[in-house]
Image 1 (spheres, rainbow, N blue to C red):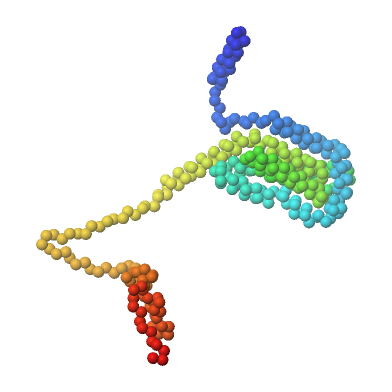
Image 2: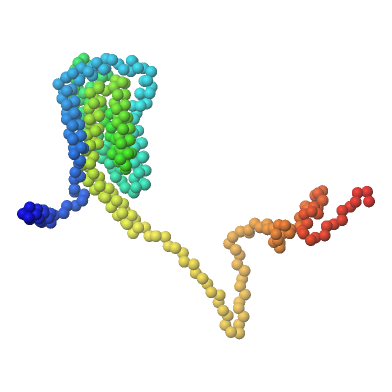
Length: 340
């Protein structure tokens, strides 16, 4: 009995506290990330910082970078060089953004929402800010511009660390999985985006344009942006509402300033009746405004059934009339007897 009373008092306190709390607007509510996503975000951030620290202190990772560079994969497997040249385009900002934006634009038009396009714009904006700041902040030179063997080549004015191709591939193709409408589509698109971004990163190492550590950091940078997108959802929803409000205002203002075209109302004129004892005045013939119409060739009347029509032989034709095509009940002309 006492346990029930204590439970009832606690519930009353909770409900009283909820009634006193003021309501917040929906667009100010920050979405709560799942525990799984928080763990992934924390682990990826720790991996990102570990890669940066390993390169800064010139650890075994930097020595591995030099070993891969001296291995020269583009010479060891030169037969696939042409394919890698085309495949690495899947990580370039321009072509990939155009392809993905076209698909998301079609989805926005079908679903009457701007969320797919705004989410893509927010992810690319985050990518430019975070990856661009890291590139110019650390200033690492690429393999083709390395000066000292075994050095980390940082602080020399380069812009190679982390790999922009790899991070762009992770974000651009991963956004399709993030916006998938069904769990099955999300799993398939996640696998496709992971394989694509993995291939783009290894393609840059094969071509010698990036160190191996650049690619590792690029993967982590792109994954961090995808994992942080739920925190941007309130801002995306607010931007979508503002754009739709601006569109409605523009339509309303346009409707006020530009008058609608007047619809002509047909006027029916009644004939004027003459007064009693007077004849109606004769009307003058009015010439038609239209030109002469072409003659219309109609079938000779009266219109009868096809089976009842008499076949007509054209003038000057050597073909004799067909007696078997005459209408039913008509007398057939006598045929001339040959030699009679």
